[in-house]
Image (tube, rainbow, N blue to C red; front, side):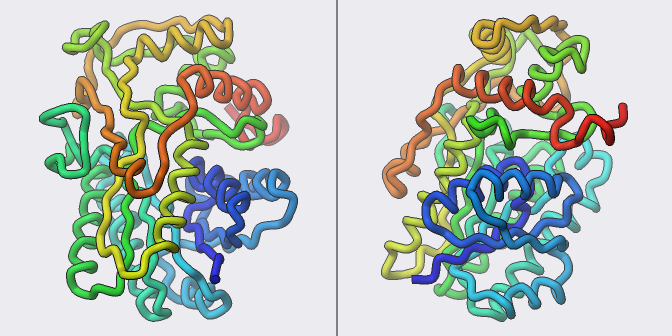
Length: 348
């Protein structure tokens, strides 16, 4: 059976961890990434972890000609599509770039897939498509709405995938809605390497612990939550990677097309910002100075998943704890104080 997978955005945070999991599950991977928000060093590290080189193509998903060259050379079972811009604040400031990359790029990829009769796609979506949830936990039938162009770009792609599945019943289009990925590979060799000041909470915490940033800003302490701070469903990135492997295994078992299939990947448990900070302090014995700041526009009080569908269909559930997430994040931060950059090339 064909086990070759194209991983777009495979040099990124979630993509690199998924490449390790795919190799461990017996898949042959080809990584396609334009390195706009990732590092080739991540590909080198993954190659070292799996003990063999990875075929890597530096390319943009908007480049149809280059994609055709890749599809000419390889016969793929399917595509795992991570390639996309992901900073909420930047998307508000530069919406056209987000729609061009995330939406137009995906349309381009789908067109090339159709030309080469590759009908299996696993799309990297986001819990942001649910907006401010009406009820908790959030399941896959919860209403969808977005508060920023990043989330809107993900939701637009979901609509496109849904329409594509209706138009032609050959398609298998699984959209995985991630909640809040954190952590790093237990080896400490790959992890989250944000450009400049982190947009996400956990790398911000770890950089404060390392002394790279002076203080953590916690946006909002007056929400209707356990301690006034926002509550999120934090999921270990290696659990998330296994979710993609489980989705592929599910596709391989199907005797008929699945069409458009949305599935949440989360733990089903909410953890507040203060609870995460406390867990990090307790786990790592590091100091995390913090201050409270005003709520950010677009932020919501609570967001956590119902992950029942993933368990029922894929046999998948998150296994790793908040303690694991903190330990692995700190190991990555300690071993790689400048991320994938060497000391000599790192510039403040």
